[in-house]
Length: 242
Image 1: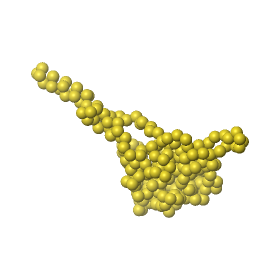
Image 2: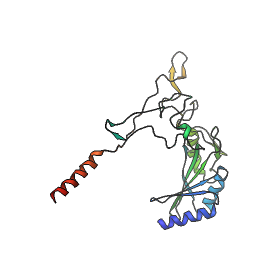
Image 3: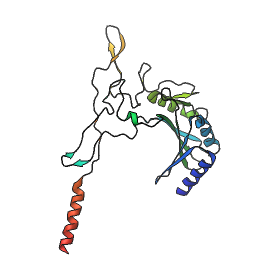
């Protein structure tokens, strides 16, 4: 299987000159990074020339503040630090930027297609970055794999990525009056507006959110020096007994 993956990576490098082929070891996952202009032609070539007859998913990615970490998990004489600095996810209001936004990659929004070849028993990941962060646009893959219709609608709804050429690009998870795109890193966890039914107006009304930004405490695995200390003491006891 590893040899098959390596051979596929070599074929992709030979076929798509100028593109980046990334192989994640030891899993052997292959990612083909192409420019936005090559997104649709690359998809067509992967289907026709490489036998990837099925696209099992199309997703969006927001790389804003990618790689930044606001949680200090080092052990000190004062114990485990849980300090939170700056405006992390969920603790900023509309119009503010989360932690690490200034250090984000040059390109922010990416579209990722996950392809499957049943005849060759192979998978590959096709990724491209939108050229404009203000209005991220990539070509729709519905002409290659019609089944991605709802996948692209979901990525549009949650990330605001516009799939040019899509036959019916509209929201699919949120309602039509929803403000913003909830999976973007600069979207506050409290949201932008809240909905309630107004008995006097006899209709649903949208209002600014009435709660403050909140902190979600993640499950953090911290280093614990007790295990290393116990192992060292056991080794010392063994030396003494000799």
